Image 1 (tube, rainbow, N blue to C red):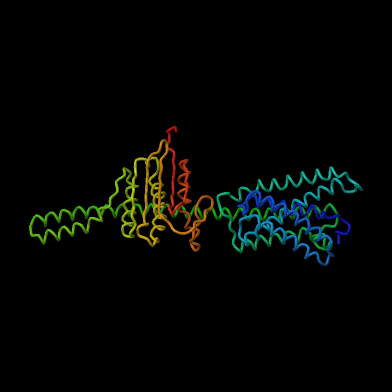
Image 2 (cartoon, rainbow, N blue to C red):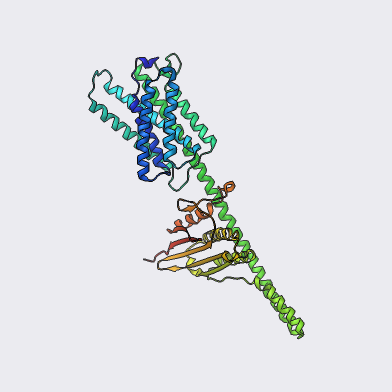
Length: 441
């Protein structure tokens, strides 16, 4: 084996590379621990990896696989402990970190042997300087490159097939990059020292690029799915708005026609029984006159429709709205924002067992140089927030459900505004603040 004549990467350097690669991905995604706890866990992880590598270095070649398994297990433990990811997704980041560690360690050792090969006793200072420069530059560059693939506002999820494909790329990359150290008698092995190191670095780079491209493609597919889902949601809500507006016009016309009929019948007879009957008939249709007039026809339509829905579901909806304040927004955005907020509130209120708590409060008004939209409702149960938004409990439809609040945030940010969600004392509050163009605060 060529490793008998070529110096391989020292175990300490390997441990440092594995630890740094793990921390690159831990820092990129949501952390499980507070900063102080994270620092302690990272320090313990470094010590564990160093210890594992030193122990693995004492094992006979027949137990090489055992030493490698221990190192991989230590990396997985560090990622799973520090990052807020599932065990399955921890395996994905393990594959990414393993290939990154192999790449940086191989690149450094290739440069080390180029500059110091043949020097019987190189000074420790240049060796340390090269180690620090290559490791710092390599892992910093990886962190900067990977940031665009791990947005801070998204919870990271990879399915089983994604993890298996990443693991397969990592295993194949490792085996091919180290093939020359096992045997020089293959079509893919190098026979000269510099050639062996070059092949290993090149293969590790190819493996890292493959995993990076895989993650980029996954992110693009996810973004495309989100855009498509939001587009369907917006168009669906706009169609609902148009249909609701048409239905309200029909109901209002029939309501006024019926009032004329009642007046005509009442004028024809003065019998007490007939008058009582007509009074009851008029009362029975009074619920159809649920028009809300705010000064914005889109808001009027949405609130009128939702008021009728609430009345049927036994929910009390109160509204104080200045519709003219929303003139700065497009009709589709008003329909999507208000419709999403009310749908979420109705969904939460309708399941409450106490009818007295089935309350919805809506307020739309100008506040200094901003437009304020506030939606409040009672809720029950515990809420878990993710990036300022409550996590959905609809696991089977989690791709589409949850876009409601995210879509509200997207609309608010498009107008330079913000969305805040707050839950306290049984009240769930959604507040949207949008600046009025041309008005200085």
